[in-house]
Image (cartoon, rainbow, N blue to C red; front, side, top):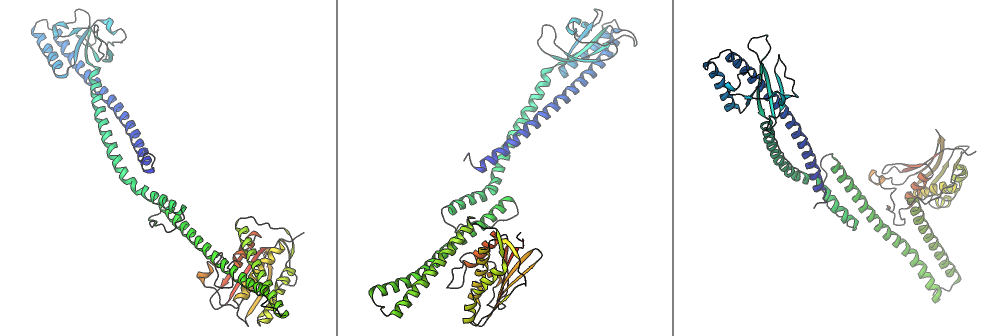
Amino acid sequence: MLGTLRFRLTALFLTVVLVFGLVSIALAVRLFQDVTRTESVRELSREAAGLADLYAQAALRSSDEGTKAPAFAARNLELATGDELYYVGASLFPGQRFGLTRLPRSALEDVDLARDRLVTFEFTPPGDDRKLIAAAQPVRLVRGTEPFGWLVVAKPVTELRAQWLTLLGRLALALAVGVGLAGMLFWWLSRRFTEPVLTLTRATQDVAAGRYDVEIPDPRGSDEISLLSDRFRRMVAKLAEGEQLKRSFLMSVSHELRTPLTAIRGHVEALREGIVSDPDQVRSSLDVIASEADRLERLVGDVLDLAKLQAHRFTVRHEEVDLGRVLDHAYSAFTEEARRREIDYRLDAVPEPPVIVSDGDRVLQVISNLLTNAFRWTPDGGRIELGLVAENGVVRVDVSDSGPGISTEQRDRIFEPFISNDVNGTGLGLPIARELAVALGGRIELSSAPGDGSRFRLVLPAAVGG
């Protein structure tokens, strides 16, 4: 559970949300601190300025009636706001009469009390461990004269901190609720992202166990998970097709091996038991044994060649190759079959065939495989043409026939191993020819249509040997 992709995604998401929330809370609290502190200083300054004017006017009156108004205002202010009132100055400052607490100048030795403007600061009263934030307003009897004291309005910093902590608690609670709701929502949503991955994981386990009939949901959308699912479906289809081809190949090879082996075994037993004793019959049986042995050799050779090519363990020589001689050799190998089957068999080559750098034996093998395929599918009395053209830096060897042609669907698979509609073939000739062409630095092109025959073209680089 803890190691699942869904859990890790949810944990990562919640971590990001939590970090973002904590940073936001820190910024919000910091901003709130600045705002509340600024507002408190502004409020203290306003109160200090108002009371200073009131006390200055009251100080001009010596009667007790003159002190009632500021004393009443001071008491109301302390009751309404909780602010504390102090005065700093000479003993003649009528602070005690007005309900103010005298503050020694030494208690504010680090504060530069201005004589002409209001000053804000923080201090700790004597005999008290509380820290106060305060505003000091100079008090003068007549405008333009020296102040005879300062009226100080202060409030504990702990009151501001209490507001900050209250906000912090509310924000923390909101963050916890938000993270919880976001976690539950993302846990539910993450199922949509992780379920396809879990399905693919289970499918890979089935495929690894050799079961290719796994059900994979059709991908919807164009996101990475959908693309991965689509690619996996294609891969499984290819693997299943490859497995089917392998089984078909084993069946085909088994059949191909059984047929000549059965013939060889039958003739050997007939010879050993003396059933065949006539010299002509003995010679005929030996010819059959030799022919079937050749067939076995070709089959085994084709299988080994294809295996080496697909495993990239095939060695290609680089030598000067006279294409004229190669084509003559390939053409001559099929002249007898063409004569016997009355096939119009032609060789059409350039007057001076080029000499290229390649592997002559492999070039001959490719052309021979293409000719073998052409003779296999061309009916008696048909037409087969072998041609050579050199131009534009390449040489083209064409093998054209008048066979039944190849449909578009078959053309997509004609070069796949073991694909053959001929009961006498294993479907290895064309795949070997294509792999050899690629190994030689070339390619094989096919143009065909049902009923119009086919043309296989071997294209090789025309590198001239020196």
